[in-house]
Image (tube, rainbow, N blue to C red):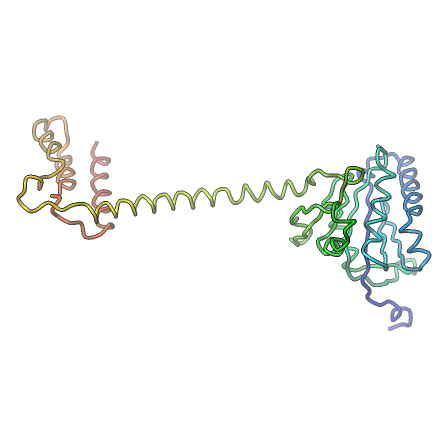
Length: 296
């Protein structure tokens, strides 16, 4: 391993990733103008100047934006984002979205033999930013927990929930906004995720509701059968409850199939005959119903 490679150590950085929304749709002249204006405004922020003077800042251009790695405090990228959002407010040409995350990064040497930075801190900050729309300042749950310890930042932080990003990873997101900066609307990507989740779980909920309703129906039927009064054998109440149906079959045989008599026999059990189980009762009713269905 060379001496230059050993100088690059893993460090925790507080990353601000900035992207110009709709950059590829702009004319080439407009692209140059937007990037020049963005660079000027970023360099003018107090957090940028303070970190640069202390030697605690790394910059990575991305073509349609940039990544800033602050090696100071979690407040530095948040302060830079808020200052930048105030200056860009109302600018129809330079619409940006920003993502913040604290994580490990390390130095690398690029193809031009220049020092650069890479690592999980940069990658996750970009994925957090990708979840937002124009005007959004999104934070990972990790860096938001650090900012929650400061009273000044608490009114700015608004929980969004989780969003699925690249490789199926789910990130907890927090939206940073106020009346002056940020975008209070729910990001479109989170709306799509919520709609997909609801559509996926709705059939399961319906199935559970149907099964639960059938269970309650069978339970009520079983309670009715087990608790119904049993008439003494030979009493006037010990009569088939559907005898009128049998009489109807006997009186009008030409209008009913022969199987109807069998169905009536199945349904005519004396009340004094206790059904031993719910299963047997349900099976008897099911068979009787099939007699009527199969022989209309």
